[in-house]
Image 1 (cartoon, rainbow, N blue to C red):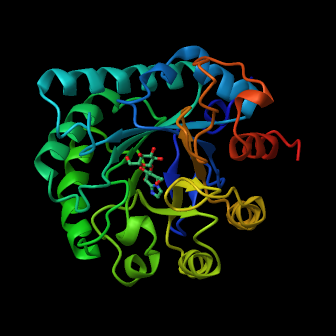
Image 2 (cartoon, protein in one colour):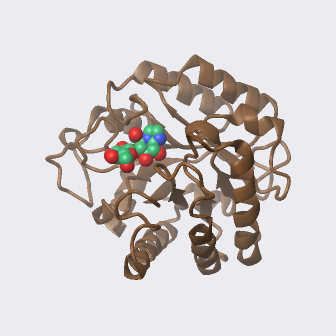
Length: 310
Ligand code: IDC
């Protein structure tokens, strides 16, 4: 099956904030975020990626690598870090072989301010950007969700340190920058966007059973301001990844994102016992294909939507 990557190739952010191909055609990517790769490495296999592409119509996979949670990049030893880099390498390789886009996500969460582990981040992004510089399908997400005591000024300081490290190796890839308050405050970004690089986009994350009109207004204002926006994570449930699946509110979000050609990735590929997980706990199939009974309703709903069956 021909993929968006086969068709559009390397993408960039244009002057009006849209993700575009080299001819200026706006392109929106739709995909799934893996759960923490340290916890669910079994899904990083070629068959899984191929099934997601063929049966779910997914054109992008996000490789979420926690930094501070147990098993995270900044809290394990050198051997652990080598193992995580190896997993990322597999993920990037399978995505590339299959013509998928892939996001390397520095998944900060309990380490609420990316400046905390900026030294390790710098070293990590130097390594991955030198490896994947020539690929054209790789996105770098430099800080998943800054939160609590982290200001937009802190994030800017961090981004101004990490982006040049990536650019020294890779001049063209799109870089996704997290935003304050768990990647929601595009309004703060719009007041003072980064001015060191044109090829960046800003993360907006929503969980439809928690974040509704108020956040959609922030999104719409950002789009009207031509701020580049990329939904690198969303859920159909509550912000803790649990709670009720809310298809009506999620559809409002996705319709709006579709209208504006904004990309989105759903959270999460795993069989963890939580609403946002793609598979029920009893499903220990790590390659697919999957049947309806393997899938939780949010994932089944999303796949129906992506494949035009809803
Ligand atoms: C959640 C996972 C859950 C895990 C928890 C802490 O779903 O299994 O125990 O993290 O590591 C986010 C974060 C994402 C969260 C998710 C749901 O980016 O890491 O995953 N969420 O809480 N932002 C908003 C929601």
